[in-house]
Image (spheres, rainbow, N blue to C red):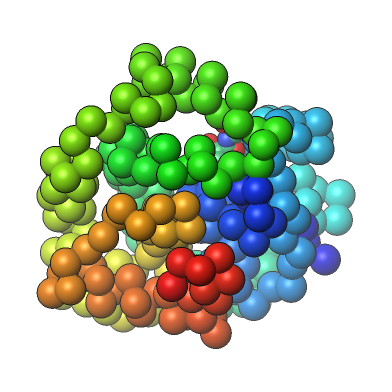
Length: 232
Ligand SMILES: N[C@@H](CCC(=O)N[C@@H](CS)C(=O)NCC(=O)O)C(=O)O
């Protein structure tokens, strides 16, 4: 069975990595059986055979695959019989764009908004590593990273504009059916909601309806995970 290493907080059920959520949804989408294995920042040696120190990592028989987009493409190529994540080369291109857009545009501001909440949910053994590495990245104490959460949230909502426009015109970012382009953005909302209550959408926001549609997919995979940690 495929193993997926999943970044977790102190509670094993608090799986919060955005790219890992993309892969979890992709595995469900393709109907593949897998075991999600809790992994923490300081357990680098456990995934060393992947050639890197970040998750997602999957192990499928002898194959170790890392990097969410590479894993999605691996799953699509290796298990063509399951429902497609891309539905052709244009869908693959859209998914690649969506991954790049989310990673380059949204990851940093969302991290700023929720960073102290992330810290508060981490396992004790991960805290010093997280504080040191993120304070180096942001150039200040975690507590100083977001001085104006109201302005940060407004700015994130504005950044979501292109996805909002798509969501107003079609049920999924991938079109009439969900695909990896949807999971690319959905992972960010899983990250935020598993760890914090600060990333909210207005009720009338078309993205709120889109999020509810993706949350309900695959037997309510996302909803179950949120409920398990008291987040939904
Ligand atoms: N480009 C990678 C990014 C992976 C990544 O940065 N993962 C984070 C969790 S969201 C991680 O494992 N970080 C380990 C660390 O910071 O030491 C992908 O999309 O798979």
